[in-house]
Amino acid sequence: MNQVMMKSTWIGLLGVVTCLLIEAKAETFQLAPAASPADNPLKGLVPYADANVDRFPHSLEFNYLKLSDLMVGRDEFDWEPLESKLDLIASRGCQAVFRIWVEYPNQPSGVPQFLIEDGVKITSWTNTEEKPASKNITPDYEDERLVTALERFVQEFGQRYDGDQRLGFLTAGLLGSWGEWHSWPRAELFASKATQLRVLKAYSRAFTKTPVLLRYPAGKSNPRYVANDDLPFGYHDDSFAWGTLDTGNPDDSWFYMNLLAKAGDNALNKWKKHPIGGEIRPEVWGQIFDAKPTHKQAQDFAKCVQQTHASWLMDSGMFNKKPSADRVQRATEAVQRMGYDFFVQSARIDRIDAQQIEVELQVLNNGVAPFYYDWSMELAVLSSTGDLLKTFPVDWKLTAIAPSTTPEMMKTTLQMEEIPDSAAKLALRVVNPLPKGKALRFANADQDADVAGWLTLGPIPK
Image (cartoon, rainbow, N blue to C red; front, side, top):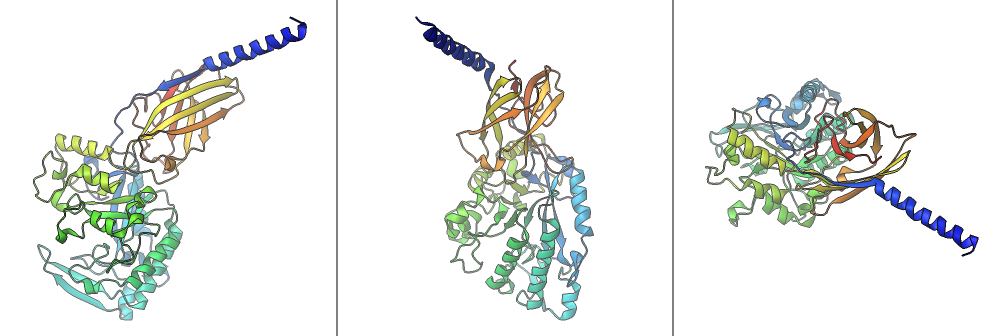
């Protein structure tokens, strides 16, 4: 063998050995699963902000406000009532869900005083279909002065609060009883399609960051509601687990899944990009989490979640009075199936050299819905005692991890001047942009194992 051939052979062998040594530094860790908490951000059961909020874990709190408290003139607004509620909710590490109303049964009118003084027609009536009967005060939704004021309010509302980290979701509100987009049984008093469309257009212009949800899915053939299946809004089912599933009874045609199917494929697939929320129907509060709910119209909660892809639900059943341990357990398990549920299946950590670590994760979403905000994510190098040595932002997107049995691969290379000798472990977290907001926790046994809010992925090869 001549010298040139010998040199080439040694270079080749050296390359193989080098590759083997580098490969030997890479390790893949299979991570163990565990139940995620019931108060993961932006999902789960939602109490009223002034309720006994400590009776069940949660990350969202709900409140109503009337329009007249916020809009005090044509171009005058008082945001203090909303600010105080947002700050109160945020002080508990939670984000808010809000609805603004102009009519609410058995309450004074929420129509701004300047519109009443201008002569906007108000109809007072009694709803005898409710038990007990309720008093209602409905404005003329076709009066141009009222519709223009609603558009002006939404514009100012969005300019001030779109993307506010204290705010998780909005329900559109403004029209109908409770802001729930109906005046049942006086359907003739409800807003026309033209008025509905103007309100929806105002919301779509004003809110491009904070998700807005609508009460009723509607396609182009809906006789009562303007088509919304192709508009950038989610939905909220406010008769959840009572008027959700298709029963096959024609009298139940207004149930949520029936309306969704009639609205078409765009509406059925809405959950893939826009959140689904709602309220558990009062008749089944609390008992819906029992092994056998007593109300004859109670529907299977798990099936309702699976079919609707619901992320959050207003609920008073777990907060009005202290729930039993059995209800708490069942409700916790039910919440874990709502919305997203992220599990890091495996982590491959490759020590390339003294300045680089390559990381590859396989991440599953075992829930029924995506995560709807692009919250940032970080990796961290930890010492053997769990001290944070250095953090690295990564450009991974939570919104890309759709519910699936196939994991999403997330890969990056960490660059640093020098990996500290004390570097022992790698960890991952999602950054909640709300100051002191609750941490998003993965459904992994090593979540919080070393540092609160961080998932320990595994040791860094030396």
